[in-house]
Length: 452
Image 1 (cartoon, one colour):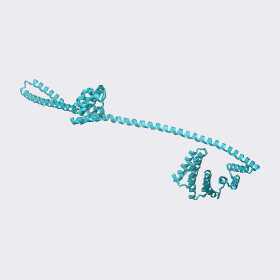
Image 2: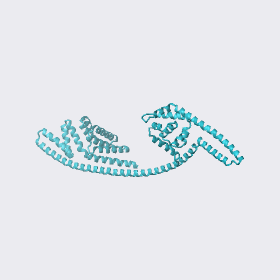
Image 3: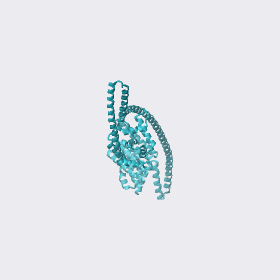
Image 4: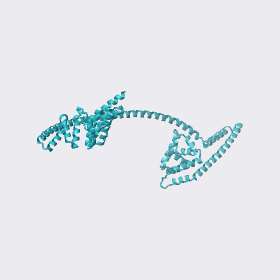
């Protein structure tokens, strides 16, 4: 119910605004208002409102010199009037449609419509209807009928219609050489024309004032809208900044906590990975030295010395076996390294690293081929590299693969297209990420990559 009332009020407001715009000469704006009013009438199924909207839109199109559109809307208004049984509205719209027929020189259509709206003429519409009928009979050469209707115009018409009637009778008097009648109608025509001129000037001033007031109001509305938009934008920026700062604080807090936990995991993994065969050999050597010291200190204790000597001999045997194993492992690694160096991809990269230009371009396919060869000869290399829990960048991963393949820093610099100092810095930083609390060198990282 409330929506129905709102649409009804909006439809009336749009119609009044359209009339005001049309009065001010703002025809496109008036047409838009009449269209909006028509949509409200259509939603309400208000036939009378739709008839008036079609008529008003037709008047706008006439002012815009679009006769086809005006003709279509006049006919729609006539059809709606007949469907709803509103003969009074039908005659009013038909009279305006007849005027358009006369403008288009369609006298047959005007002849068919003329008797309909002449059957019953209401007082407010007499001037316009008599003028239309008189114009039809004048343009079709029926002078007697035209004179009769123009006489009715002089009796009840407005000043515009009376000026038209006086001009018609002035032309007739001049044609029949009736000087007294011509003088009389000329004076009347001049008086009506002067009144219309004064009225037109007054209306023009009023329209100018109305147009100025409308433009001033539109400028004020635009200014207030701009201020409101600026205020809303500023408020949105402030709110967005506060939310962004809060989110940044929470993200930094989570990042710091995650970094601490990740560092602990790295230290644990590093301690496990650094327990290599060489460290075991070092521990065995230290154990032998301890046993020898104990043997010298306890040489007077024969029984204990014998036991220590036995343990010493056993440890030496274990050390010898372990040394042999380490030596065999080194030889095995050297053989694998030699085999890897003999592959086509490694040879190709070695050749590129010796480029006289000091730089070389390595394609993504070549990097993938190198990775496959390393996986083939060192199946656990990348898995152990992942256990370090270090988020390697693309350049750092390429550096690790080249180190594993036995490339020297100078050769790596050529393949990665960086200075040697940059490669040294990258190796040192990677070593520092593993042992942030110790003083490390780039060689530490090389050793770790070789041992994986």
